[in-house]
Image 1 (tube, rainbow, N blue to C red):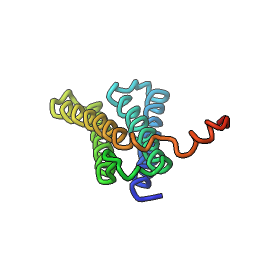
Image 2 (cartoon, rainbow, N blue to C red; image 1 turned 90 degrees about the vertical axis):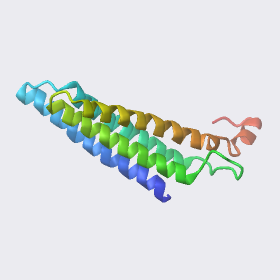
Image 3 (cartoon, rainbow, N blue to C red; image 1 turned 90 degrees about the horizontal axis):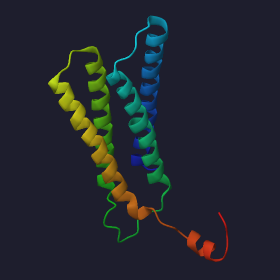
Length: 152
């Protein structure tokens, strides 16, 4: 397993822990203090788990398991994949913290701006990642076995 894969997977686990702790806070606030959570806090919890944990785990495992890029693959660039890791990680963290802060403060134009930019960063990072690995989604020998009648 190479470094970039480890970055995606370990960051995914950290984001999952943050999300679980946030969810525990939401549950305790509701059940014991009758405090219904602000929508931004619920959104922060949702995005740290879905984008931060689930999507990053999917991306890390895809990098690890998919076949190596072909020699003439112009889209796959390891440095670009690493850049998407940093874009998605920083965007997810900024989104999480801006929404948590927003849930406990008065409406703030700067926080709205941070939230919007971070959401755009998440979308762009994910799109660039999957465009980059598109060529790696191919059959490597299975098409030969399928033509001989083998079922998977």
